[in-house]
Length: 252
Image 1 (tube, rainbow, N blue to C red):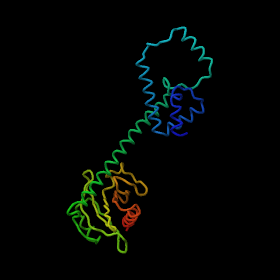
Image 2: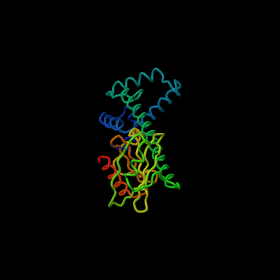
Image 3: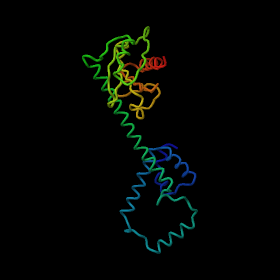
Image 4: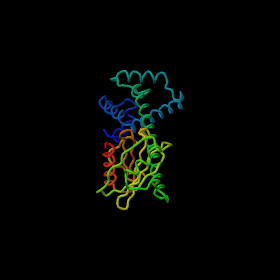
């Protein structure tokens, strides 16, 4: 069942008027789909608001109530819904609604982190002195960071590759110190950021492959206690290749 089919039946679902099999199918879909769960929750809240606003204004007469009770008693019983929704389903909807809100906040938080990283990349490259240690020799750049950041790292040997190490500088992500390295391939410059693993770790995660963020191609992962972020306007293949070199160097 897709979302379009589910949403066409949500009101009937909430009124408990679907056949048992369709109720089970729709219930399973709502439990697994945060968007539809949030939609159901909104409809439930609307029904509650309408009921509260109406109050007893349209209360049926005793005769009409007795007639309806006889008709309902003659029908096969179906699961009722909260007033309309079963308590267990309503609890799931509340959890799903909270999960949807949490996911939305996480996505916003992730976008903010990538925006900060992109700003660091752009501001560094536009600076008159983009790096504090200028060298293509990894054996010069790596020792320069000792005592300046709270971790050590390895750099790949790039001889006979299309990549060139330009240099590096100390940078910060949300007040966490880290290393910012600049690599060049043809006419493109790529930033490589390294921070302690806990820096924005829950937000960035470990996506597979190269993603397009803030107009740049980027890759990120955690390895040996460090968070790596590779970002630049180079092609996805170049970002992927440099990431592979960095991963290999970390094990050296």
